[in-house]
Length: 383
Image (cartoon, rainbow, N blue to C red; front, side, top):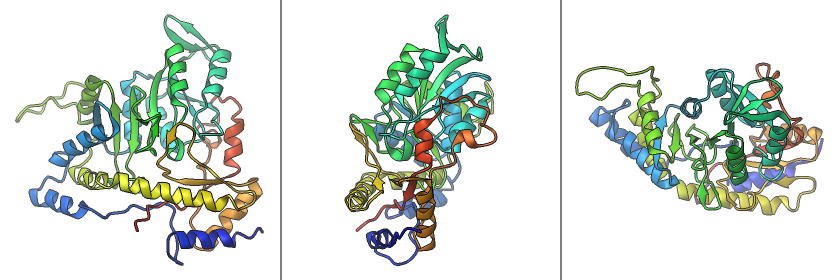
């Protein structure tokens, strides 16, 4: 087995401890307790309360979205995004196999079919080059809609994911979506605070979905958010996710099938407190990434993955690239045996039993990354 002692020692020193170093844990350093106590004191602990509205307004302002709508999870946000963009049962949606299961689970709730497109070596996100090649080879336009020549199904949307907080080449993807009449939904679950050419991820598509799970850059415990540039669509999202209840002082009338995807006030309260420190957290994560990058420049056969060109990445999870699968497994075993939590990329979606039948384009880069990438500790470090 290779000797990774220097790496283990460096990570322990980076986080100032000889104890176990987790992969990504939240930091609560501000008004979290104060705002939670306010929720309890006022009894507004459920889905009604001032922190819900405040969190939505502040996230919209932070990201530059016209409207932001909270929900229970990032998966809920993706599910609603698909519904709002008109994706129907048996539609096909272009996405990546290198993603967290939530992307494909949300598609399954709709009854849509993922088509897995390869990722870029520079972003680890959906490749516009691979996307264009697949569309040219496999689709035709009929009556203003895109159809798969092989299956006969409508190809309705594209969901790129900003992997580990690194923005994809979103401008090129936007152009392809325009040319092929596809709705663009951004899986920005991991990229709060990340920008492409100065614009926040999640604000390029028709809808952007963010996650505030416990391991994200900021957390609400569990929670998600949808971002809209179409304020009217955002209002519809708010209505549907709150049981489609028609506002009234005492009557309970619902005008369509709705969903109980409402974020409780206590979760939004934590989110408001976390958001007050988001820039500080991102600065810390970027500093850690810079230290990792400098360290790994002197380590043979291991490359640190850095933010793509024209991007500002939040470095949600730092990643290193090993030389091959065998070395990846040795690295994972050694680090986890020696107090450093590391992990490989999620199991690729096309390798899971429920998605093995789905179309893909060969996924050359995707397989290359899966055999080499390891995520290393990425928690905020406040000094």
